[in-house]
Length: 69
Image 1 (cartoon, one colour):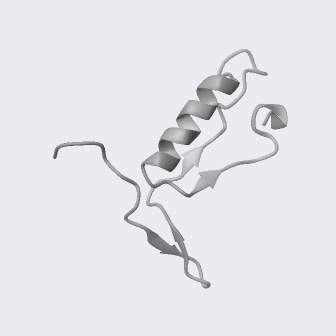
Image 2 (cartoon, one colour; image 1 turned 60 degrees about the vertical axis):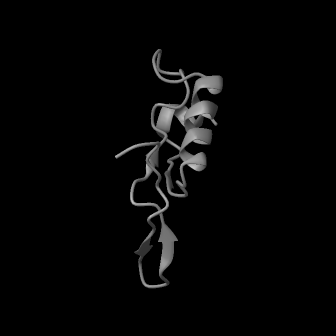
């Protein structure tokens, strides 16, 4: 396989059939409030790369790194 892999081979999720990328981007390590993790610039780069490759499924939770955006 050559070139960058894409995430745009979407799957249907749930009853309404929401089209989502096959992998979810987990954001638990976005923010360094716990003394480790991706700082804001690095997190933005990771997020943008996921979007550029077709990702549209992001796993977030208000408890991740104390809710740091």
